[in-house]
Image 1 (tube, rainbow, N blue to C red):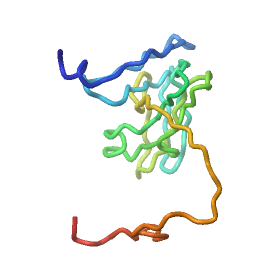
Image 2 (image 1 turned 135 degrees about the vertical axis):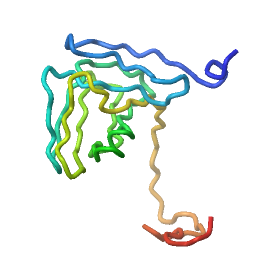
Image 3 (image 1 turned 180 degrees about the vertical axis):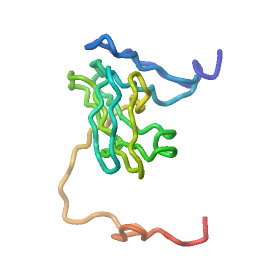
Image 4 (image 1 turned 90 degrees about the horizontal axis):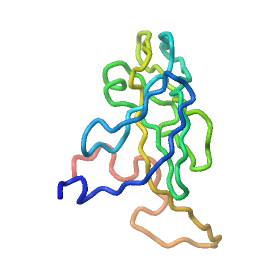
Amino acid sequence: MDLYTATMQEIEINFRRLSPLATLPVYQSELAAGMDLHAAIEVPVTIEPGAIAMIPCGFAIEIPPGYEGQVRPRSGLACKHGVSIPNSPGTVDADYRGEMKVALINLGRTAFTVEPSMRIAQLVIAPVLRARLRETTQLSDTARGSGGFGSTGVGSTGS
């Protein structure tokens, strides 16, 4: 038994091709968490600095109840070009059946061109827990309390 089969769980997800340009998402390594999403475009799309473009992937998927799809930036595009996802991670709900599209934002200083079939994002399938909220007049005490942004040691040299 290899490391993958000993530690990973698999679920089946239906995939419906909406465009002949669609590329089936695939994991690029044995232990990759995300599948690469590809641009299903015929001609390059240039994204100017500060602009957002919706890039179609050319397919729809059927995520099983109890799971979600998380659309995340590709680290190479983010680090090398400043290209990210404005609502990262984007959520694909289990009841969504429309075309998978990725909103890309160019946070870089120069225009960025998305080429046909380019890997533009990652799709991570993750389990979802639903919360049942219960109204109360008091919450339990913690050491942090109501300390907000930066209250846990921003700028400290400790671990």
